[in-house]
Length: 247
Image (cartoon, rainbow, N blue to C red; front, side, top):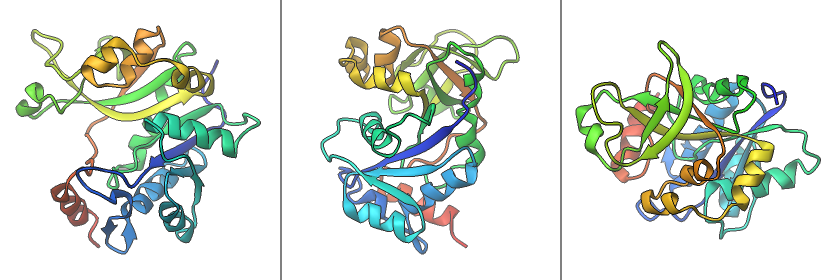
């Protein structure tokens, strides 16, 4: 397995957010939030972009903007399951060798950050890739809502193998901590294997889906980026995104 020859970006989206109902269609300027995310993914220029959505109104918003959307079953337990259904619907012949799972609630993300998730695939044994940024805010070190990536990093390296992910302050001792960013790249075979695995023990304890892959012996590599993109989970986050994207 070599560097991706034909990647695709799939953005899972559903209306059922508990903290911000209807989140994908929340207006930011002239467009819905999901349209902003779709545009950032297109600007990354790493491959075609598809929104995998549970509701037809999301699909309609994307199509009005000129994009491609695929309706999926509403009851998927995770975004990974949703993108897998969409991938098989739009590419049954298996032309796309890598799938980027981009969250639908990060409308201000830098397209270069989206593209960065492909870099670790230069290592042929990597199954899954993801991103992290150094923690600079001291309050994040002990915040359980900030997931920490424990990475085997060589000196001066910008990517390394993920050893663990946790809501706890890990590792202990002096040295940097890394804020995990929940964007993933999957080799196609790895995504197929991942969605077929049962939930892992550690996954259920930490409430972190990526631990299922580590428990099953899959390799995840982490690419470092400079900043954590704003995730929109609350009305306050939405107002912040509106200010950032205001013309």
